[in-house]
Image 1 (tube, protein in one colour):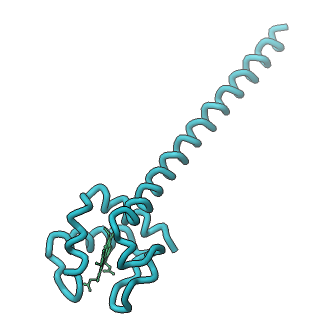
Image 2 (image 1 turned 180 degrees about the vertical axis):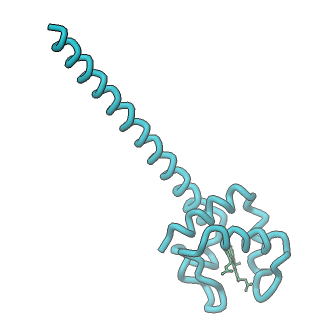
Image 3 (image 1 turned 90 degrees about the vertical axis):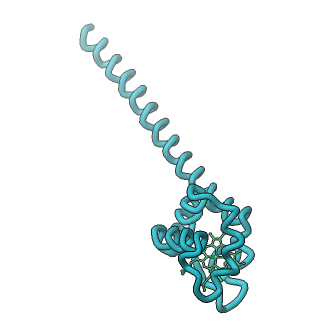
Length: 118
Ligand code: HEC
C-alpha cells in the first residue's frame, strides 16, 4: 500500500517535472525565434535590403558587400563605425544616411540575424 502511494507520487511528480521542463524549453525556443524574427524583420523594415539584397547576399551593386553569414561582432562594429562616421571609406556614405533609422539594440539584433544567415 505504502509502495503504491509512493509509486503514484513519483509518477505524478515526474509527469509534472517533464511538463515543466518542456514548458521552459518551449519558452526558450520562443524567445530565440522572437530575437531572430526581430533581426530579420528589422533588416527589411530599416531598408537594409535595398542595397544588400533581401537575402543579404545579393547586393544592388557589385561594389556593395554581401553581409550574410558575417561574424556578429564584426558586422555590429562596422554598423556602429559607419553610423558614427569613424568608417568613412569607399561608399560607406551611401549607407550612413540610413543608419539614423537604427539604434544600438536594433543593430545588435540585425547583426545577430546576419550571423545566422548562410
Ligand atoms: C544605400 C545603400 C545601403 C543601405 C540602405 C545599407 N547599406 Fe550597409 N553598406 C552599404 C555599402 C556601400 C557598404 C560598404 C561601404 C564601404 O565601401 O566602405 C555597406 C557596408 C555594410 C556593412 C559592413 C560590411 C563589411 O564587410 O565591412 C554592414 C554590416 C552593413 N552595411 C549593414 C547594413 C545594415 C544592417 C543596413 C540597414 C540598417 C544597411 N547596411 C543599409 C550600403 C548600404
